[in-house]
Length: 463
Picture (cartoon, helix red, strand yellow):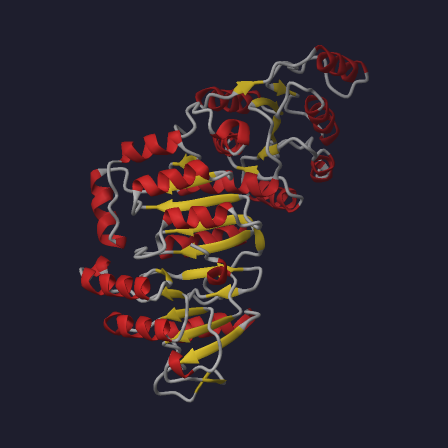
């Protein structure tokens, strides 16, 4: 499928546009009118104008080429409207309307599929939110912006079978300053499915990471083959791991959830990194958004609390990652730092590096700088226990100055004071996590995004 006009249309018809507050067609028109750089054509059989824009009774009445039609009308008349789009030469359609196979109306779904095939149209939905492309401010989402934020442009594509989960994710990504290349809620995927989307985003120059929320796939073999040939990292959160969850998924988006072990095996054999819940997906995504990819998974830990270093070590080992072995040169640099009284003699300078509870910002900076220079170290986790009065607030600047070609991940457990400094650190592009487990989780996912590690089948999806 050539979906470029779907995601980058120059003109959009909103069919079912409305002036009535609370209507889906009204919300979509507001979203489209707000910032979209293309031309918007509202379609409403009764109104002359929608939000001040001339309305048309049918898409057939629009005297212009329409690249994309967004349909928000009752399910029973959707087939008629899709047919009109086909007759009007519209090649891309999003059906936002619900009330199809997820509600027991497979007949209506089959009708719109047949019509789409007849006119060689690409159709997303039904039962979805549609598309958000921040580069051109294409926004078919009917959730108002005062209730759901939209992220800025970035390099991550997020694709969700669930509209509600997708909307919440947009909120979370926006709050964390994680940028999106594109978002798509594809619902019942009567036509465009997961495999089609993988193929499209494989060639999308604006996308570096593809993330799915999946309840089940439409065509397992087709999806597997698409992920195998994709040259970009793919991460999936798949629900329906239990029998009860699979049943719920079937009623939600008419998804055939299938046996979870089958998905797990397929993910392991292809390019898909499996995140077992939203928190894991979010942690990995934040690290990917902020930091470079590591060359391997030999990790150094720097901490001012021995217990936190031990916990991080346990997490690394359990995720089949390695504590880096320091080189002779690194050990000599630590010895020199002790002689210069920057690091105390009683600090633990093997990996994990414990620079003791009275560590200052200067001591942190020196220790991190030393381990980053070690060729055996691929990435560094810094544990910051801000409850210690010795750490000055200039730690934010010191960490920022140490960013470079290797990932730098911070862990900072704590309350209000910690959260305030955490926000400042993240503004500099360094992701911060509340527990050692979350920090290691993020780094594990970042390592699995490396081309060298995506296909090595080394417990890629075990989490």
